[in-house]
Image 1 (spheres, one colour):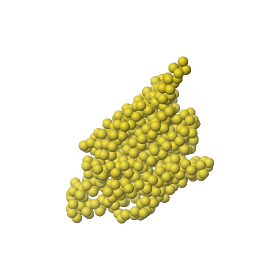
Image 2 (cartoon, one colour):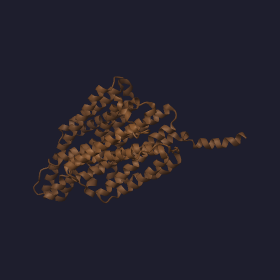
Image 3 (cartoon, rainbow, N blue to C red):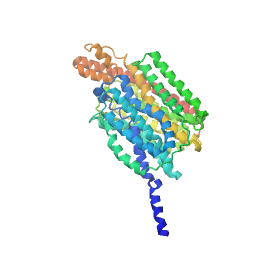
Image 4 (cartoon, rainbow, N blue to C red):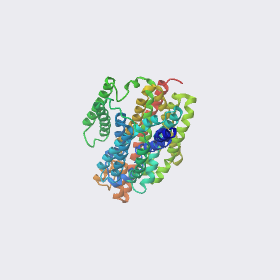
Length: 509
């Protein structure tokens, strides 16, 4: 009788996800890495992509930016859907959509097609990302093991953006579409593994679903981003319409915020923002990622189109940023208990601002040693600040609202990535276009195209050739450098002000 009863118990234990928790962690972290890498993987691929598809400056920004801007507003919505219908189901469908969208992006024939494919990638990523954190909390029941698992998850989330350009640089040397197509075989391995390993989570069908909040949050963030981009470029609508779109987005977000306290189960725990430490931590995450992702894009173009590096060489020259980010994450765990959250976050943001300052003196000449030093400062400082900000967010939130706090942190991460490209890219476009004067020997149509972006100018210069083409490329390089200086000034001011605000607002600990 005892033996007969033991067999079902063994089979039940084998099905217990806690017995495969470390395998599940690897699976979830690989999924998360795919999502975070895709936010920055195109930064090195911009010149090759521009030569192949010839997008306008605004189309190029949308190609790069639409992914993060779609992920950010959908995170909270898909987190709620996972709670309602089951997280495993959402992850599996997210894998399928991510794989199909990756294949579509790889073979996109036009800029518009690529933008739509990148938007679908964002939807797939938003389906997967919230479940990765929730499933870790589900399968790691021991608090010490859960802390280790969450630390690994956080390191992967932060390192993914830094690794993206390196991955892109290696793949684009073969073909620009490879930066997307590489996702497909990885997902073909992850999908059956996820189906076998991930635990089923019982959906809570009784959980209220507020469609109005979902629409308000998604439409509001996209309207703000679109209005901001168009205000800088004016390619699709006049300035007044861009401002109206931006203000309309702000109004939708205000309605979303005012609606949440009236809901029995809100989409977003707005009450958490009443805690000063929590709000400061969220702003720290948003601006830290804002600076990292936005500046990565600008500096990747500087290396290739101003200094003339190949994609692989540019990726290798950005390697110090990746390594220093990883080292910063490991070091921050030891720094934080010794000097406290306030000094760690403020110091990390201040270090990034300091590391950017030397770039204001650069022109079209190379600075290999100082470039490496700046990348080290940026990567280390951002990662230290992000870890301190994350710790501040989770420490300020009560245990009962930890899930809501984590969702807000994830949203701040993705929104920071999207706004970093949108804001800094728009500033660069605004300064670059009027800074490129007419070049003798280049037709007016060619000059209009060259003023779209530095990558477009390089393409036109190659078509014109001769002395006129060389003169156009030189003028475009200087115009881009001046625009880069403006972008760096904005970043340094924002980072410096945030560092001071953190030092003032956070309590000494």
